[in-house]
Length: 477
Image (cartoon, rainbow, N blue to C red; front, side, top):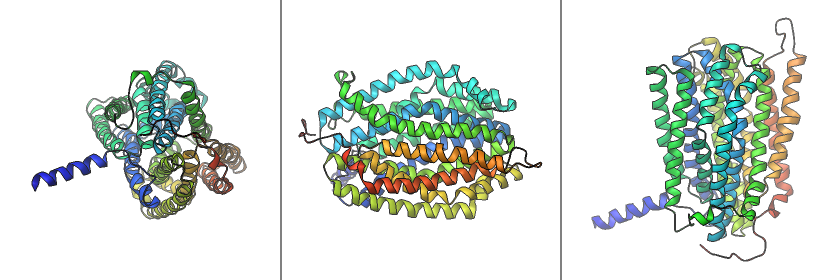
């Protein structure tokens, strides 16, 4: 009897860390079951940067906190290629997995791994030489310039771990396994937090210490993910012959991934351009903006988690030729996400001031951060809608529509609006304009993006973008 129970527990644990077929069962339940580990994983991912900010803010000071935050737009801008490849990898894998095409699945995964390795080498060789010129271009205050530069150089020199974690995590998510990535990320996050404290509090390494801790933790998570994929021989074949990219899969990866990467690049570029305006308001406002970004990162997690879940769900069902389930899942998933976002928005409005106090002991900084956060709070529901429906379109293979929506919202609307508000609110007391321009312009971009996304989804061009055509699968899993 005991042996039978142990076997049952073992089977349940094995199933928990196995790929999930999302073409069967209730769409809403499948999406929620996939989203919960994703959400926990995103929380852990956010803890990387949050731990950096909290520890340097408490042990080094507000200027160090501002330095870490000012470096993030440049970091995000230079990492967007790998974000795009990760999204493209997830879409390819989910569609081939849904179509039960093992040969194509193996080739696409091999292509992703090789592309990541080559790109990592190029990125690590080039980026350390461009960080300081970019920081100077953004009018980074002299008081935090060297800290920003050292933080970025260390992260880029060890960025292969981050790149491979994103790509391999994207592959696992495409297979429907969000639990394994969560487990390895939790381990890495714990390592990162411990090392942050040790390097800063005990070795007095400052901003450089938190960067080094992040690099070590990311490399660990990437190694664990690679070992996990090597053990999934029943799903795909990890063989040297598949590591040589074939043109078909390379083109598909770039077609799917580059628009997603460009979407992130556009958003990051707008953040970089607006960062220059942010820097003009001084160190106190920069530090407040950093705190808002950290809390905002947690508030946005349900949106990004549901969005990723919708991409995998749509990809597998499009691969299985189940467009009816795609539409059903889009409706259920978006309603669930909007409900979660509403709760989070109310929580921020009620208890946001206490969250801000975690990052700093300066009362003026706490109040300014909370005020900025209240302006943005109404936009989180709009972001849930945008991410969910964009996830459906991406999963079906349409990565262009979300990219153009991002262009409209962040370039055509946000940047001119931010600088316009700053210009027209100039006064003797505020010669650079009102700092409200940063939050108000972002809120406007989110709301407009949601409206345009709903329109594109309803038009339905995304339904014709699947990787498969009318040819039958060549090799069933």
